[in-house]
Length: 152
Image 1: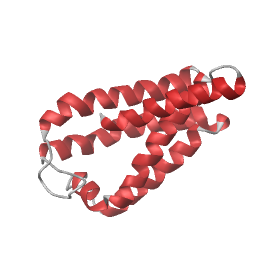
Image 2 (image 1 turned 60 degrees about the vertical axis):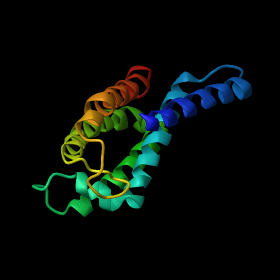
Image 3 (image 1 turned 180 degrees about the vertical axis):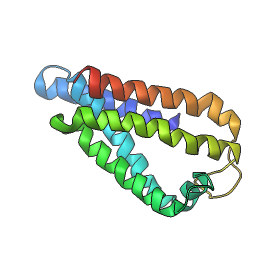
């Protein structure tokens, strides 16, 4: 849930900035900027915590490190895509699909108590999945839909 702070703080600061500089809060821009900063941040984390991220991927998926880097690049591209009006809606649709698919890795990670930052098995486990990750996934999906599709 700490990661959601990035979304909300960026959103609020962007609303304030647009109000100061444009004379009105730009809700559409601010909402997409909040998600863009969040998803770029998480994309970059794929390169810093690649060993822990690799551990999240289910064993039956081959070339797991490839997928860690690939999804990192995709997340960075999605952040950029949300900020370009002509690509925003398709990016939001694809990002929602991505959030649903990546949830499989979150289940696997929780089941195996994976700590992605330490790349070991000292993570919070299923408690984290139920109390934090599922609500966070719902918020990310709804936020992306609202600002990337509905308001667009």
